[in-house]
Length: 451
Figure 1: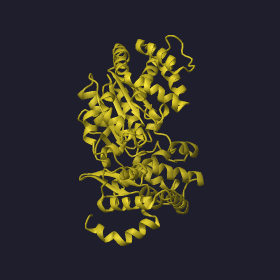
Figure 2: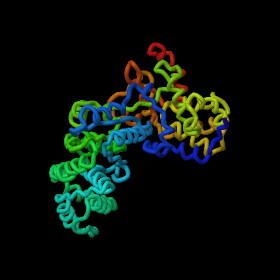
Figure 3: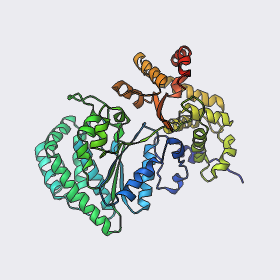
Figure 4: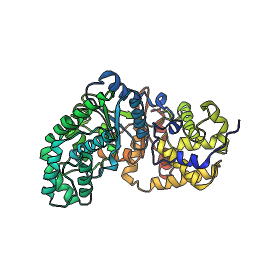
């Protein structure tokens, strides 16, 4: 049987800027399940909590991991599977409706309310939230700025118009926050009783099992200090965590990975997680903590790329088609290993190859793309950050200091899980820089006793 590569379709399938739409049958063919090497069935645990353990009671679950490690794709898989079990799922990317550098609790609550209301309209469910009708009128009067809001405007429309207006002006946004902050509990109570409670009742009348809200991309909130001395994520998810947890439906929040290293991680688990630790999606381990190649992880990364080239071909047959995409298996493996098991990182490298030439890619093209990424990745790293990276390599762990959060957020170091637990390694692209190689030459003997 002849298998030809559809270059345009392949190019679109490898776009690193968008997750797989798991409700789409075609895109679902591209999906590779990495649970066997990631240390557990993470999404299944989130799903089981909603569908088996507490289907009729509100739940609040936390999900985290490196930016670009595949969280959105996994959450969209969760959405698709919950919908198959007859739950109504509202999934949205917070980055589309909020400014990640300037977020408050009321922004999150209003964002959820607006997205839920919008989704209900698609099911011909109309819920009148009287409190917000009054609040919108008061807000317009308080801000003393023209906002085109009709009497009895729909909740989602009102929120969208006020949000759009205040997005134009940081000063206006601050004034709105000052007005809404003392009313947070009233806003929360109204969302719960007038919106979520009624929505759940209407949904069940239509045969749905319940309402689930998945708030993606909240892990991208800026890790910046506030006047109080707390960071913005600590303020939102720890200090105000109990309010975010009070929503009267199933909620899944993505949170910054750095919070799991905070001295207050236990408070996070208690206040927002309800005593349950966040579920963490680690990198795909293409290497072992001993430094050797992890053949199982590498094989799955190969499949991730080949599935996007040949989605209709059984996985056992795809390896026979490697030479349609690369000049050799070794060239494919080189790309997979240098990605460190970072899904978006691998797709980004591959996408760059596609922009340079048509497949099959030769080793020269792959090395040129890797060199370009290596130079760009090393540019922003200063001497103190290199020292932190070296300490992570020596100890295979990350401390709770804010400096180490930079290493994780900037993808200078990666987190992996195995049967011994979590461990950390330098991004393989950085391991090839002259700076790292000189340090390694002087320190590799120290590592022998640790591996």
